[in-house]
Structure formats: structure tokens, C-alpha cells
Length: 356
Image 1 (tube, rainbow, N blue to C red):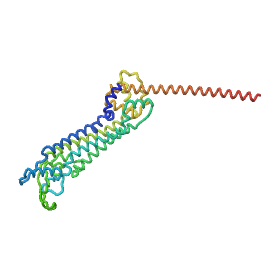
Image 2 (cartoon, rainbow, N blue to C red):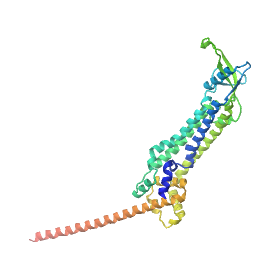
Image 3 (cartoon, rainbow, N blue to C red):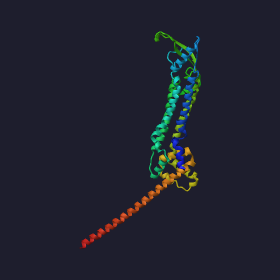
Image 4 (cartoon, helix red, strand yellow):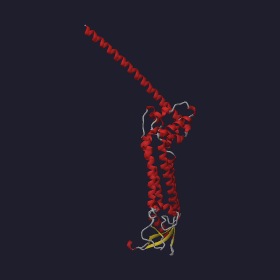
């Protein structure tokens, strides 16, 4: 059974490294961000990502130039109440939103990949059995696991802060998602904007005239609603990650470890007679963390033979230690008897010499 479990999971060892909360942060969310970013980017490439109009007639070639210029340079300006656009672009981040999503997804994957790079060699069941058999105490694997969890929390906080800074700088910091629900001048995703386009002229660049064209950006509505959902999804992930860390800390306390072993004993029907007190004495922090993860990943029916092997390894180690202790006691008794015999012989020899 253990060989089957190893073969099943050796191609995907990350399954033994994380729980459900970690998978939401390290796997599901980056995949969603990547798919959405690719969808948005291809939509901007292969569909009409903006519709511009003006009072003057615009020829087809000129329209393509305007669309390409505005899309590439992001020189959009918000429409104010007085319809008097400024000379400074208000939306320089518009062409980079898909890239921002990809970067956010890569940052979410970074803690998992980094921790696996340093601690992947301890993910094998055989290593855990050997550690129990030797009675070796270790906490480095657990420390790496918690480093990954704290890094996930730091990444989520960084993403929330950066999105708030980029998209909500004018809107009161972290309150910008609530402002997005409204259509106002402070909305970072206005669907109707001015595009400041230079006219084609053979004159010097400093003498070129600038023309303000009003454009409608269909992708802005998609960006707005996705940003709202992504922000609140990140808040939920942050709360879940913090709660998950607290839960793991409570799991690894001494009382919770004993309760877990008692549950293992009660549910392991074929081996109810096995005494797990030796396992509680010989298991260390890393072993308990890995058993918890195995229980969540593979279920208790698969975990039972692993626990049995761990207990048998602990029993064998205890028997070996007991035999060694008996051998040492016997050898010590022999040494004491030998010393006593030697002392008696020396005393008799000294007495004989004195008499002579």
C-alpha cells in the first residue's frame, strides 16, 4: 500500500506539501489570473477594444492609427464635468492590466516553489519512517512549511496594497473597490475617455497639434468588475490563510497531537490493539505535520498502513534499544564481577606477601 501511495504521488509531490487553503493560493488563483489575463489580452488584440468618434469625419486609415496610438501609449484622460481634459494622461496602467494579473499570479506561486526547492528532499514517507526509527527529532520541515504559509500571507497583503495604490490612489486607499461600484469621476476604470492624439504633420514635433478624441473602451467594464471580484477574493484568501495558520499552530500543540493519535487508533479498525503511546513518544514535529497533510490529501484509509508502518518502526526501534540496554547491563555486570575477582586476587596476593 505504501509503495502504491508513493508511486501515485511521486509525480506530484506538491500534493504532500500543502493543504486546501494553500492550493487556493498557490494553484487555483494563479491559474484563474493567467486565463483571465490571456483572455483580456487576446480580446484587445483581435477585437475592437475601443470605439472613437469626433465631430469631424475620420477616415479608415486614420481611425486605425488613432486606435493603435491610444492603445499602445495609454494616453487616455478622464472626462471631467467641464469637458476640459488635462495634458497629463490619467490611465497609464490601462495597457498593463493583463501583465499585472500575470505578475500577481507568479508572485502567488513564488512561496511554494521556493520552499519546495529547499525542503523537497524531506517529502518522502521513507524519510519519515527512518526518522521515527532513529528517534531523531526534527522541526526544519515544519519551519519551511510555515515559512511558505507566512510568505503567502505577505504576498496577498502586497498584492492588495499594490492594487490599492495603483487603482485607488485617488479614492482613499483600501476603500477603492466600494468606489468602483459607482460611476463617478474618481472611477479608475472609466469606460468613456478622451484620447490625446497628435496630428500628422511635416512640421517639427514641438509644433504638432494635439487632437482630443472621445473614445469608448468596452474592456474597462470587464476590468472594473473583475478587479472588484479579485480584490474581495484576495481578502477572503488572506482571512483564510491567517485562520489556517492559527489552526495549524493549535494542531501542533501537545494535546492536539495526542488527540490526533487517539483518533488514528480508534479509526484504524484492523489494528485497534496497537499501542500508539510509543508513537507519541518518538514522533517529532515534522512527523506530525506530514501525517496531518497525508490525512488530508489521501484520506484515512490510505493513512492507516502508513501509521502502522510508523508504529512498527517505533516498536522495532524500542526493542532494539531495549536489547542494547540489556546487553549493556549484562556487560556492566560482567565488568563489575571481573573487577571484583581481580580485586580479591590482588588482596590475597598482598596478604601472602605480608605473611612471608
